[in-house]
Amino acid sequence: MNKSFNWRVFVSFGLFLSFFMILVSGVILYIGPSGRGPKATGWHIIGLTKSEWQNQHIIFGLAFSLISLFHLFISNWKVFFSYLNTQTTGGLKNTGELFVIIILFFLFSFGTYFNVQPFSGILEFGKSISKSWEGKTTQPPDSQQRGSTKLNGVDGRVTPLRPL
Image (cartoon, rainbow, N blue to C red; front, side, top):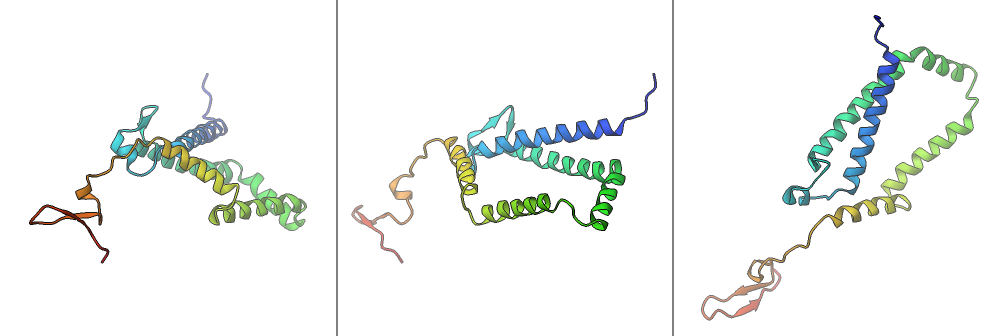
């Protein structure tokens, strides 16, 4: 049986799989260690390092965006433009829904930017999980601590350094 390629099935599965990968990689990056720790300790989860998870997240984000545009403008362009035409000529009939989503958009944007609750709590929770991956740090020897002490050349006594 020779069936033609079904673009709707392709787009639907493509959106689902790319969204799933964005979701998984996003959660892993959210809870994963930050800074130099992952590279220095050889951190990995499900076989991938942090930078490999970042690469997966970026590429599948791009794939999701491209498939979404294909879905909107190629597969469903008639429905999309018909909807826009109906809404603009007949006026916005669902102004409540539009108003609520615009308010939520700005609430999320400004709440995150100005670091207010619950957005700051979500971000701090992720940072605390990320920091939990880090091991105990070791202190450098006293002679290597910046601005702490110096050795006098003649008698070997240690004297505190004064700020410049």
